[in-house]
Length: 498
Image (cartoon, rainbow, N blue to C red; front, side, top):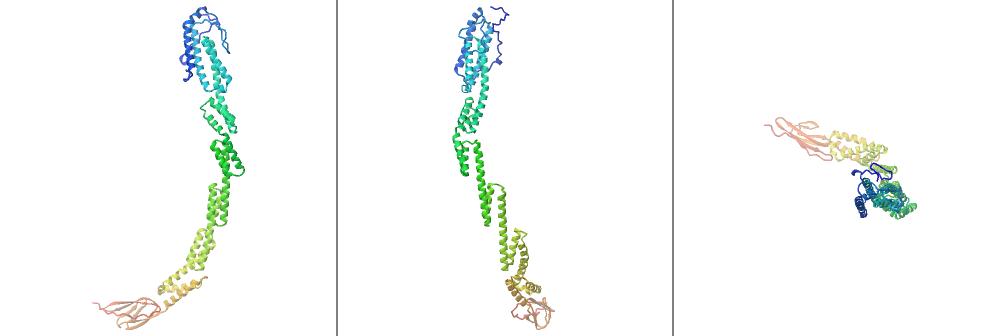
């Protein structure tokens, strides 16, 4: 036995027990029952060793056998058990148990990543370390078990890091294969990614896209063939079908956009051709509809906007020309008011139109003359007023100088001249009185007293007034009309004033 205080090199030094907060987290729930049973068995064997075997080892101390740095297999010959103090042995056992718990948890995490598919040799060596540690632990060779477990944990951390790298590499390789249309490596890499991470959305999506890759490539082939032969609508349908299969397929998106652009160009050109043809035939409604179709395809296209402007100009010119034709027709018929309206309409469309400017001056004068003549012809009694009669005579003189056409005007002049002649011709009227009554005619003057008297008066409406001292005044109204013989006008003051 060694004396207290001596620490020879072949004696395992005590290991400080870890505080509870330093211990690794317990294994995840759901581990295989074998792991739980193994841990329980280790605890039972440890208790058995402390109670039964440790006293014998203390009594018979022999130099311990140091474990190899990297054990490959458990020695076939049972090494001589060292004699250690109970505290050191308990510390070694505790540390081995802690490492075992960590490695069991780590093994479960690694198994979920299925390393047997992407790190076969490393995974086999990891499991060898775990088995070596377990065998050493069951043989109560705790120092050797610690070495096995530590090496296994380091290797496990490396495997976890490698799993992350492999996952990213598989996703990148699968995506590259998918984009170049190579189904087999795309499926292989996405399946590998899903073995490492079964919940990885990118891998699941990539695998689903790769599964439909042959169908997608067939649709793309149809689209390109139709595009090559100028069947744009068929190409659009095929590109659209490809995007239904894989909405993220960039070549289909680009092809569809290009095909739609070409189809829009064809439709735009057809609409413009139809619009220009209709414009040439002065079919402004059809031209306008065609240019608007073109603008619906290409908003604010200068050619289509110019086409609409030409439609507007054509319609304006058409209305101006129509107004000119109508005005000329009205002038020939001496319908001056209506001709004037047409010239006004033309000037509203284009204030610079010269024929309308000149027509306005000409027709306004004739329209005014026509209106005045028509008024006097319709109401000849107005000529009985001296001032109106004088105006009519001036109007006749003015009308004589008017330019052609004059058929209607000459007829108006003939009628009005006759009415002027009649209004200017006096009519003899006889007045009968009593020789005592003073007679006067309103707007004519004093006639005097008489028993019978005659006056020559022009046609019109007159009032005779009789007055006599001591008698009430009397009035007598009478009308003189051309071509008629008036009755005698009797006017006597007969009613005395009381």
